[in-house]
Length: 304
Image (tube, rainbow, N blue to C red; front, side, top):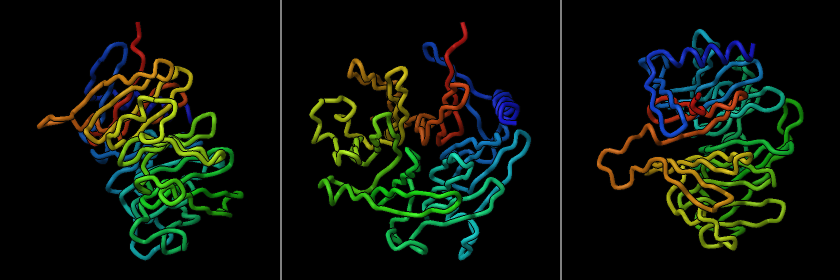
């Protein structure tokens, strides 16, 4: 099921797409004109049965290889997603889907059944005006959730969330903001977090935070004080792809400590928002998917 559904989706995307080649990379562009229910795609995920989940500003969509099913918010109903603006999708080891929205997080099965909602209505740790979830990741049986009011970690036993803890970077490290965006976790258990004032690296085990004003290794990626939107770490190739709100797309070479710009709309009167990457996703086949303000892009090595 996984392989057949995913291959069908990849083939489907090739119809009426816009393709561009840069160096040895091949990009394909998917829009409403080629069958996508929405143009503004905010996030993507693939579950254990092969469904592709698509987050948008108009609700959540599940693609089975042939058609799309929509899941949406109903005010006052905790058995629906907390908001129709989907900011993050994450599938855990049990196949459950964590749906991050601007109104909190929902834990759901892939048939749409809501198991738990995390927001100010259900948990005292969350702030009503800052319920917005930007990212969700799992590492060593801990789930990390970045929000407009800090980072949260929680543990889960089966289908039940058991403990929730808040990590206040502004209070504990005197950092300039608690409005945290997308993040990734590296092999050393460090969180690389997008913020309004650049990138920060948070080590919860050592209780350390590195950023533009605390950069003992002089990492050039930390010197970029742009508002970061999303990133993905490719530890095999020792690179970090990231996007900023300018919009721009850049690649940081960890070995050379060098940032290369793929696209920059800085100073442009008409920047290309197809280069505002809301999320990077690397699938089982090594393809990098990019959810953008103008549909979906994919990146593959060019066949020779």
